[in-house]
Length: 155
Length: 291
Image (cartoon, rainbow over all chains, first blue to last red; front, side):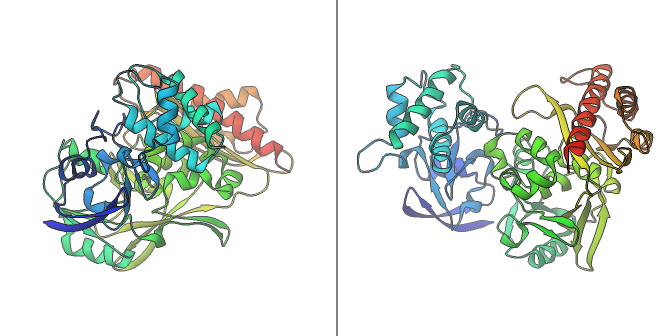
């Protein structure tokens, strides 16, 4: 069974015919060629596939593309606005919050959503917010610092 | 990983979902948050010809106080339970438990109804619903029926829900004055299921003795387990250290875990005892501090 879906991705309406079983992450990476969103564990543990669905961070390996029909999706490519990095992206570079970079897109999506809801999260709140995003370089210390730094910049 | 092919149907209302379920029968599966179902399909542990998506039915997402109960729509996502002042104030057991379910991103999609209806003994809401004396409201083509949570779970992944029914609402009775509840869970890491967990709600008489005790266990058997002997033992007592420990021992006796990577049978039973003791103490403390 094919479905015609219409999804607003990073502000632009994208339409496609998709199979019921197509996962949102595959729609994003393969149909739209937005490969900033990664596939890691593929079992909804690691969080590298995190995107915003109507503004909320979700694991796109565990959502069907057809479920995003009529909704808006933001990926890491959508963080930059008008050629200017998102304050969270700047903070990640300034605070060396990445080593291999594999978890970074997911971390950016989760932490940018956190600051939308909570302008000044405590260290504990930041750590809880990223508890579904794994960094196997274990660079959590600098990731937390980057989020705090971005929060300061935005306030 | 890609699921085996299926047809997807998005229901705009609960009635439409019930109609679709009637049409596709045994081949159909209800998709709520999908946080257990989609991994099941991807890992090909199960497959269904038709998925009926109820996650866009806005009318299934609510938390309200009505007629002596807190009524929660089955489609209410975990993140909303986490943020609800009514829940925090009325059922501290949920305030304890929900932040420990999976991770924040999963809680943005996963629903209380899916967690309950899936029939997975490692899910946390079933034991909580049992401890709270909740009723689960099922809707089918013939109407509604309320099922007490402690009679809902039949076997591993087998519930009292009929093939043509959908879980619509959870009704948790408002606890009487001098009540307290708590959840204590041991897990290895974020995202993992419990090694063991215990949900408790106690209500005290004016003299401090126990009027009602709900005690139920997570992930130590093929179904969530109501620790009936422990409940019976605690009622009528004015709990002290000794009777709490005795109750915890009785609760652990109700556990029937199997050994796996989370631990041996003996370990899980003993952890059930420890967690039961801690949950009872926390629930009592909360009940006693209530004016």
